[in-house]
Amino acid sequence: NAGVTQTPKFQVLKTGQSMTLQCAQDMNHEYMSWYRQDPGMGLRLIHYSVGAGITDQGEVPNGYNVSRSTTEDFPLRLLSAAPSQTSVYFCASRGYSGSKNIQYFGAGTRLSVL
Amino acid sequence: AQKITQTQPGMFVQEKEAVTLDCTYDTSDPSYGLFWYKQPSSGEMIFLIYQGSYDQQNATEGRYSLNFQKARKSANLVISASQLGDSAMYFCAMREDLYNQGGKLIFGQGTELSVKP
Image 1 (cartoon, one colour):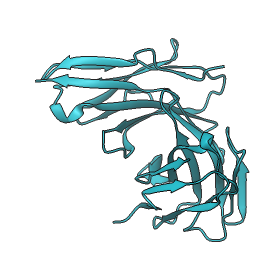
Image 2 (spheres, rainbow over the protein chains, first blue to last red):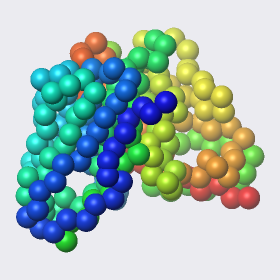
Image 3 (spheres, chains in turn brown, cyan):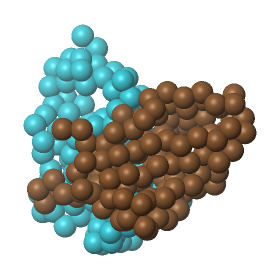
């Protein structure tokens, strides 16, 4: 009963380093998304995907890349980390639970950029 | 423009009492959904309850109910018989254009609820 799995849970980067946050879901959901959560600002959408091979930008896409080669995986890449990208990152997938289309979240990745 | 507004940054409630968390939204789309999520101190986001704009009755899930007032554009969460484990951050969220596969979920800023013993 894995649901949405994010790795790593914690990460510390130096400014300018690159890294990939991994996200996998086992619910066969077409829709997946990435959010960042900053204090006092709720969750803001970075990128989303409606299926393999299809991605689009959300509210705050700058500095992040995504790709979707399979239904299961939706990695988020930080190309050149900046202190402003210090945040908690959540991956989510969306699918039907009964008649309701619900978004389910991973446990989050806490990222610090020094 | 802020699409989801939660005006209560923090609230206290006595254990076993009911509490209402406020949420107002702004949309011109006739087809939308409203969601509430709970985020305990451990950090995960837990789905609580959903209300569709066309739903005739207010949603209920156990001790959670959603007071949906469409004309006022409000979707308040009511927690009955509060428990210590209800202490958490609560987020209201909205998804417009429900029939669009790419419809985005937009969040409010959250309300931190503390339950007192």
